[in-house]
Image (tube, rainbow, N blue to C red; front, side, top):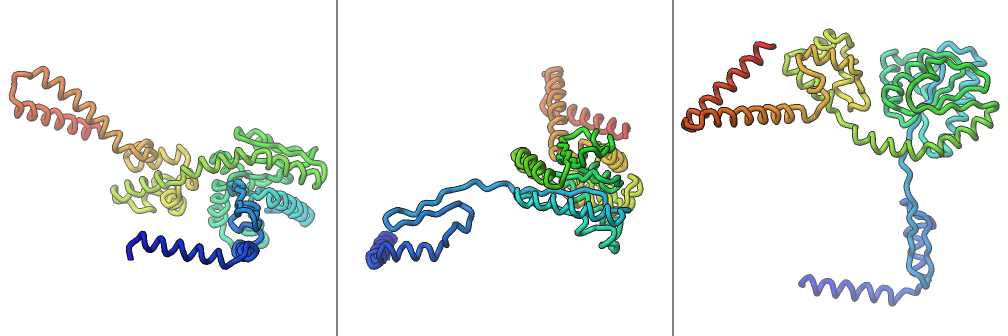
Length: 338
């Protein structure tokens, strides 16, 4: 049976099917199959016996994640109860605007998760901060831990919301962070709920655009290049870490994670580049080798043209010999500079 015959037969079967069922039966079957609402999030579905099925699209929001920073270590019972209560308020508001909130107290709390090692706490919470779309900081009690989290957010350009009671004095090391910040001063928890919800709705378009942009940076360019050069130099992870001043785990974090997570500072990169006898440009530029080769070719071609013009009367074979000699001298000079 050829394709056209098969198509005609299929069309006839479909016509026969709809001729044997009433409009009401078709609608009922449709409702049974797709349900009263659209399971894929397209919005309301209108099904009427005399009308076609209409699907009304509704835009999907970009999923967002927030990190809740606050004092957790050294709190007395009353202070801890206040932080927990405020955390619950923040979590409730985030849930109402479809933002997934990470609370360290539920994973790395110094009281309830004392068995988690200090290194693991640092790696876990740092990764959560730098991969978040927003950091919300409860500025109620001094905390070195939340100070570190604010530093991580600043280095990764994660927007920050600072929350404090109306009259509470907040460290200028916090309020002076030169990045995108929103200050919320509240009188009562109910006021906090309304103010935070308003701010989150207000900045959501910016957070979504930032997330879509930064997702394009989620590649391991720096780490993979460092590992490649380290192995070429015959250095172990421990050897290079010792020369740079990192732990093996710290260097491993740079080598194995995408750049937006490892996010090594310029000083660290300079130390690594020095230890590997290279430049920071070679570590961070994915097209470094191609750019260098293009530069060499350009310089070489210019020099070759000058030589060819100078010795226009010599043979092609002699021209190539002169160019090889020039290239050899260039390589010798480069070796002497090292």
